[in-house]
Length: 299
Image (cartoon, rainbow, N blue to C red):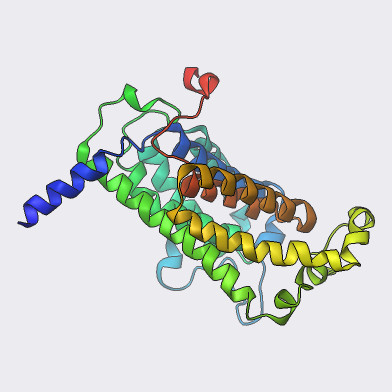
C-alpha cells in the first residue's frame, strides 16, 4: 500500500513538469548577488565587530558555528577570506554546476548568518532559502542553471523531490508574510497608521534628507496612513497568494516588487529587497516555465 502511495505521489509531482528551469536559476543568482553586495560595499570592520555580550568576532567558538567560512583562518585574514567568498558567490551567480555551487551557496549563507555582527532580514532569508534549495540543486544535472530543462535527462525521483522542496519553500515564504503582517497589528503605530512616518524619520534607518524634501508633503499629512496600512494589507494578500491562480500571483508579484523597491530606496534596505525579489520568484512565478534569456542560454 505504501509503495502505491509513494508511486502515486511521485507521478502527481512529475505531472507538474520539470522545476529545473532558468526561473529557479535566476532566483539563485539574485540571492548570490544580494550577499555579494553586502560583502563588497561594507568593510570588514563593519561586518565583524564585538557587540554587547559577545566579545568574540567572528563568532566561532561553539557548536556548528565552527564550520563557518570566516572561522577557517585567524581574524587577521578576514579581508582575504571575504575576497574568496565574493569569488565563490560570483561562481554561484554565474549558474555553473548547481549540484556543486548549491552546497557552496548554503555554506556561505550559513557563514554570513552565524559569523557576521551586522545583519538584516535579507541575510536570514538567504540562509533559509539556500538550505531549502539544496534538494533541488543536488538533483539538478545541468552544467548551467540557465540551460533549458529539455537539454538534460531528468530523474523522476529528483523531479519529485525538487517539487516537494519548492512547496516547502513557498509555504515558508507565505508564513513569513503572514507573520510580518499579523505582528504589525499588535503595534500601536502600525494600527493608527503612523509607523511609516517614524521609520522614514529614524536617524539611523530613515530617508535621506534630499529625498525627504520630496515626500515630506505626504509624510506630514494624513496620507501617511496609505503606505502604512497598505503594507499590512499587501503582506496579508501575499500570504493568500499561496492559494491563488497564476493571474492573481502575477499581480501580487508586481505589487510586492514595487513594495520592496520602495523599501530599498526609502530605507536603504537594498540587499534585503534584493533577497526578497528572489524569494518572490520562487514563491509566485511558475517554476515549470522558462524565462526568455537567450543570451545567457547561448553563453
